View 1 (cartoon, rainbow, N blue to C red):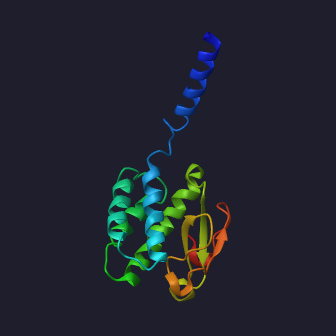
View 2: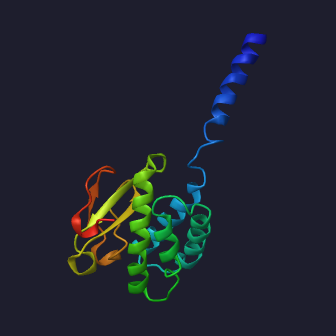
View 3: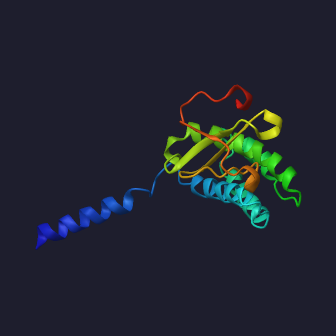
Length: 163
């Protein structure tokens, strides 16, 4: 009986300790809040943006020294607007910070991709991060939902969107 109990305890301990002391734990709220904003903008829906922007600011405040987070914190304040074009412009700055943060923090990249739309902002281009799957462009929404090119996390960024 003792060896079986020891094996069960060992398995449970291993399963439970996997994320307990992870250095990326504080980022678990930042990335999901950002992704919720991206999804809302891709759906042309400003409804959830203000609340998610507040969450984004809250998590960014706890991660001030991480790469890109200063950009995120500064631009997140500008996301709470009733003008979707202005919100998308602010989202570009937030996205630049999120891409910088996630490229420097591989632990938070799993399940997500970085995407570049060359037509955004009068053909200057813009980056964003989204969950893996079909492209859902937050800069154009329904008018050009699938516009974009997925990039590898370690790829050289397009010159027009360099961080």
